[in-house]
Length: 160
Image (cartoon, rainbow, N blue to C red; front, side, top):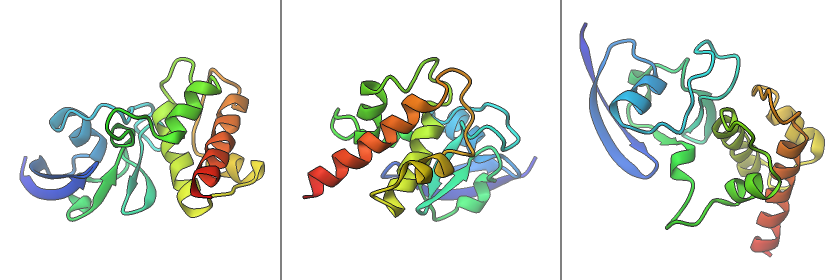
């Protein structure tokens, strides 16, 4: 299989790799770069556990070809904490008991981050809509919704 050169920024670090033509981003992130924070759930774009932010846009890494990310800025949950301090969304997910098995958590957090980046003061309905592409089989969604709203309140208090 032909190899394709690709360069991008992953969680603030420049990366350059030769990847198989047609390789998905999740495969490259997990298998070549060791970032196992995006989870491969359905591998067909229906569960959201592989969600990452590419150039400010929420994307499913199981449907994104790595070669299309040349020059992109990619953020995963592995890049959210800074200097050992959890991102406010990560902290809120812990405080609100929004993670049970944890499999959906990275995708939920990335969907929530994309929401809060574009809408720092979301309503409950905004949160529900933003998380609608993510499946959770454990929590019943209420703790997740609470966590996102808690993080939004925390962010607005810190900005004040």
